[in-house]
Image (cartoon, rainbow, N blue to C red; front, side, top):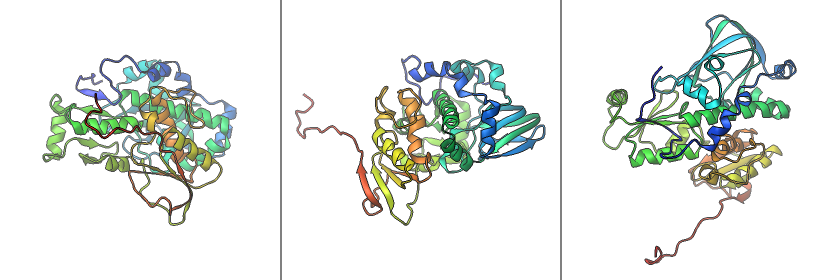
Length: 375
């Protein structure tokens, strides 16, 4: 197993700080992160998928490839291993310690467990960050992404349990910096800091590798031969490579934003994707309205920067840490109900493309335009 290296920095790392509040919460939530469904709950899942059988050694998930949806294991065992965009395996011992589990707990998925990732809810092809392979004969319910979204709506209590598990798994990935883009560039580079801040505020797991201290990173740079000004290189989970991308380019590559508007007007356009804007989007979409969310920065607003906020979007885990809110709630306004869409970094004809426009831009501090302001 590869050892941790000082030049590899997880996305949530902050020098001089102890464990984040969400880290402490994870250690007590192992059962919520990996719930075992009861026979009655499994029967309720059957309506949204189909039962499939897998031969020994057959692949259920492959890292870097889109997954088929959610699995609920009925019989047999599934071996699971994670690896990132550059092929490095997840440090299992560190992950187990983070969530209060044993190495045996992390090795296999057992009957009744749910095998899925929160990206399945996005309405777009989701790239897996794990390898999952059948150990012996395996029988499982396969729930496609659209079936999973329907389950979360039709089965509120069971859906909330599954959603909580997926959000907590994403939070664990954020804490470890595993399962998302890998940034290769000097740690103190302004460009690395710019992209790191964007990913962190967007609730995307990532890590940074400094090529000045890592021979493997240097070999990757040699392969892609970046020109001056093309650093940092961003390696996406599907293997795609971006050279010094803008925040908008990175957001589009991650599937965070819609790239087109539909031809007919939306019912409501919401300007600002902070807690208030996302909460408005979720409530409106839950009533069947088509929602367009416009944000020039990052989804989550103050949720991505505040350690504790009081306003929460509907249905989030009962925790106010910014990590949990950005990991779970900020995507929810976009994918929880199919009519909701989100577009970032665009100056669209908002007022013409919707019947109602709602401003949720929040307060902005004003500064006096004089030289003595700082005094």
